[in-house]
Length: 494
Image (cartoon, rainbow, N blue to C red; front, side, top):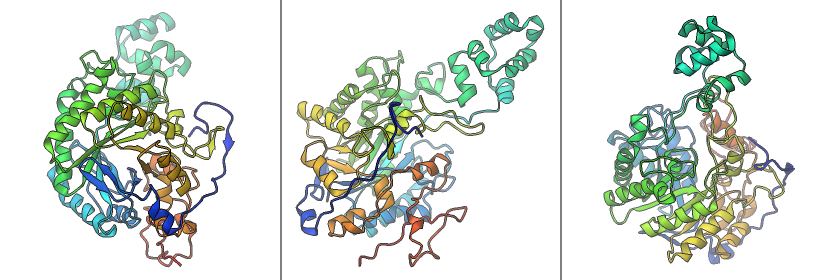
């Protein structure tokens, strides 16, 4: 991952000195006060955002390890816990949860019951639902030119002109000649899209209107999202978070890079059209007591991409449409991802936009702590200026009580989300609330966890294995390679 998102001088930052509250201070704080999210109320403004732990079965079912994972977060009693990005299409997608068919409901109900029990009924549970387009691994060079390149007359003419008629005698000769070229030559002979497919692996884009499945997305997605939300409601979830962020389908419709000419791209209202239609379909399908919000980007951090002014416009449109909350993220795009190794797929958190999504302690002068809060603050100001009181969720390098409370008191956000710190210590909310903040296991912000996610390994925290004296060290479930514990050491105050 890039060390500094804008190419400036890399600075190694130390963790800020924390200030933890007494139990009385926590009880009087805004952080631990209730907040309304449309038809539901969370007991506090503490939020564990969606993280993919790679613990589902290969068929997308809830497993015991999934239950253990969410159970440990629920025990910390956050106001809201968001379950990982869960697929809405009934297609193979590896060990990612799915809500694309009724056969997944029994497992999802067990998940809801687990969170209710482990949190003592104090945690609201949302399911993040997502659509993503096809992406393939980077191919071997010979295989790409032999099998995957759609050979055209332009290729044949260019090869004949540059290498002679014999090199273009037939299609097999053209393919062999292209495979023998170095990358600099291939950049001249291939279109930019063809070179990307060769160098990074093929992936669909929302602008690929020549593909029937892409052209039909506006007709298909509202129904898929609505059906998924209805299943989430049937399973007992309190609501859904529509995944409109990062490198995935809905974010791509919102993006300034979306130039579809069918009424679903180009202008700002056209880019917002499908996200609003999806929300309307979901809202119509679920009950009035079911919460429906969205996570979207405050800044894409890519060339030609959306910036904060676009995010503010999206936020106002969503608030006016009736979204129950707006959760703000940043970056995490395929457009600037690092080139993957042959046989691996591109990962959208490896380039500058990925760094901005999950900044580490190796950053620029601004540092990683609260780095993205100004985006949430700007969206909130725009939403309030439009006369809406939709809650805004802020995230990004939040790791202690004073920092979180200051964000809320300043009116920069209504809810505080913390992924990496919650992973380092799922009990940290409860430790703060009970006056045991000094016992918090603090995230180092090195993105050890993100590195595991990139390799599709079970996500854990490097700090979990440092507590070698944990009483459960021998009994706790281990990763598939046996090297890492899949659950944090239990908290026993005192």
